[in-house]
Image 1: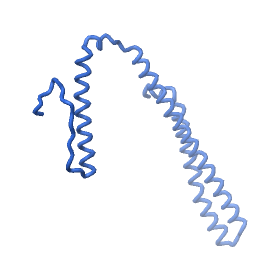
Image 2: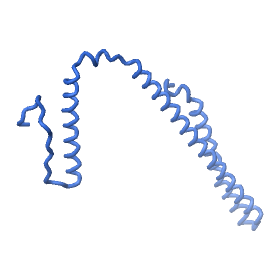
Image 3: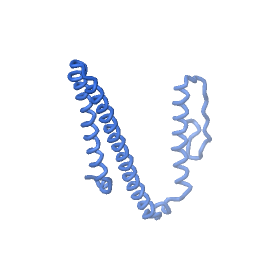
Image 4: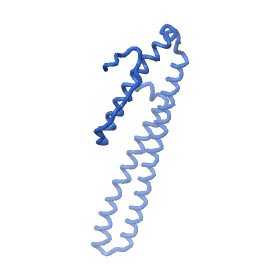
Length: 151
């Protein structure tokens, strides 16, 4: 099993048991419909109809309860997995060495990032304008020192 599920594997197994029980009780409802037809309507026994109808409601309620428990297990499983991933990412950030960042001058780093972000912003604005059907638009970008003015 994957390491991210190590703490939550019991919830995963329990949720599958709840799915099985929910399905089992849901399958008992049509059996009660058959009892209503066979023993109640055909023979005219109203008590059999009422008993089968009450059992149908009880089985549906039990099935719904197990379905809700399955959803609760899914939420708890997701919370446990997300907590593990957040904790692991946080520990990696805490252990990160800033030595590599200090080797690159900040102005070069920021300049490269600025050009990439600006291109992405321009492409995003173009895509949005085209999606909205705007044909007459002009997107300007501040010139940078690294770039030719002809682009």
